[in-house]
Image (cartoon, rainbow, N blue to C red):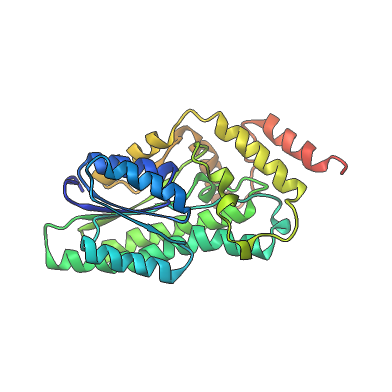
Amino acid sequence: MKNFQGRTAVITGAGSGFGLETSRIAARRGMNVVMADVQADALERAAAEIEATGAKVLAQRLDVSKAADVEALGRAVASRFGAPHIVFNNAGVGAGGLIWENTLADWEWVLGVNVMGVVHGVRVFTPMMLEAAAKDTAYKGHIVNTASMAGLVDMPNMGVYNVSKHAVVALSETLYQDLRLVTDQIGASVLCPFFVPTGITESQRNRPDELRAANKLTRSQLIGKAMNDRAVAKGKVSAADVAQFVFEAIEADRFYIYSHPKALGIVQTRLEDVVQARNPTDPFAGRPEIGAELRAALRAPN
């Protein structure tokens, strides 16, 4: 996909982070921008900023984990702009801790947003895009799903998040292959960022009341959050950088999008573990001091 002028982009999680930065680029490239987010005040500010650039904006508050919300967004997009050309299923939340300590509410919240949010986006918008492609041989479209490096390697103390992002990678790879069976006009990509400041470590702020854990965060969850916050704060790649990578991948029809390609060594090691049927390698082997810190914190007396 090369031409963006006058085309339409649908972006979830558009109130901040990758979603907001992608909305900014879409506006600069002359696109109609459909912005969706669960946080109403952030969405209102972001939409006002994008509208001020002169772009046509449709802003809609929604919870991507709810099928009816995404279906309503699809109807609104079709009514206002017709079939979209870019769909960025980007909304996501983070949660950590030892995997047996995650509550049922943790699993329902994280999988609901991170996995079912992408499922609903694919389910609602892909048929619209295929119909547009069937009617117009000049139509070009692209779907981008936000996963994570946690979808390619399993860092400890992040189980529920790892599971959700592995699912998004699998979903996206299958989407890519399925689209190739039926059309040459629609591409797909998966975004696998590493530690980038986006606000995801504070995503508890948007957790629905009915899915809030009854108890306070466990020690492992507090330790995990503190370490992730520190890693994110040290990140040198910005959300704006990642948004640019997304558009470059769309233009090049490139499937895998990485924010930190130098981190792929741990992914390669994991894949070699799988192929050679060896026990999983310590993902902190290259940074043993981090693994030692985490083990010491978790093993310390209460």
